[in-house]
Length: 238
Ligand SMILES: N[C@@H](CCC(=O)N[C@@H](CS)C(=O)NCC(=O)O)C(=O)O
Image (cartoon, rainbow, N blue to C red):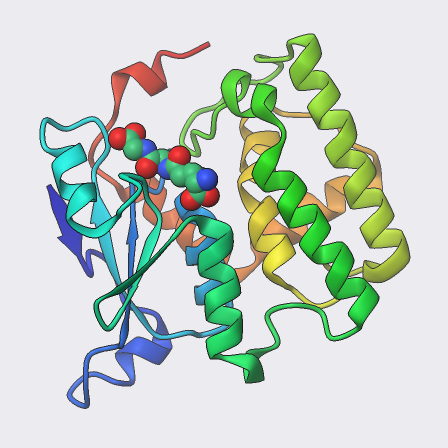
């Protein structure tokens, strides 16, 4: 159960049509539900990195088999570069940033870059309650739901991170001024805050809106809305 190039290709890919296929293939899951897939897809799209998308539908009889065709970990996202697999959202972003240094996917300042890596690592290794109790479901509207004490604590810590980054590095822009991998990493949190209608301080609400309006994020969201399949076990969740 996979779609390749299901939707319009990124401009950089389209411009290569007739020339050669993009070298990179990014294997992802459903855009409505797969927060891990969203991160590298948004980062690569935001920075015009050419790639072919391979989308595998979750919760199908052959989902595991399909994912294991590409991914040694049995999870998506996974990036395939000329047959070489790079799995895990953070490793993919690091790999792509190294392959395309001219795109400056991380902040240029060494301290800003270290902080960006710290907040991405924290996103990657923490916030289990937010993930469990307020799962990403872009098409859903669940105002006020999922606010367990642990999820509320995760929200508090995320607000602290955003406040610190915006104040120290981002000012009125993204977490580190220009859009970076760090914003792509927090884009699924932005989706959750919208779905669950989390009340935020004005500066953080403005950040949520800025991320949601970013063309790469908006494209992912539009494609999530256009996906035909619904997964009851995720849609029926609290
Ligand atoms: N830490 C991994 C997490 C990847 C992960 O959990 N992916 C989920 C989809 S969002 C998955 O592959 N699930 C397989 C399944 O549900 O069958 C990463 O950052 O890439």
